[in-house]
Amino acid sequence: QVQLVESGGGLVQAGGSLRLSCAASGRTLSNYATGWFRQAPGKEREFVATESGTAGRTYYADSARGRFTISRDNAKSTVYLQMNSLRPDDTAVYYCAARWSPTGTYIYTGGYNEWGQGTQVTVSS
Image (cartoon, rainbow, N blue to C red; front, side, top):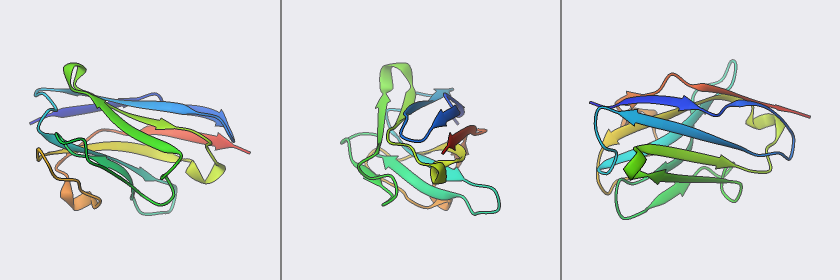
């Protein structure tokens, strides 16, 4: 079992950048697929980005592709989400998620069994 703690959220103006971090404890993330999701008020949790545990495979939601980058530092057991060119509609609570899977990538919430508590991102216009 792995425990996940997100950080790095905050208030930023449109066009700005933020880097979210997700620190894992309990186990190394080397063989875990990881993902970032977000949930805006009154909306369902939606997929943002995913990365496989190994092989370096990534996949992004259309809304994130070209602006966001998911990455990891396995030595630090930390996953990152670099967010650039932020827009007001990126405002949401951002969650990281993980599941044991060395090569898979997963875009649905049901694909993950470990979740962090979330970090708020607010983008002002």
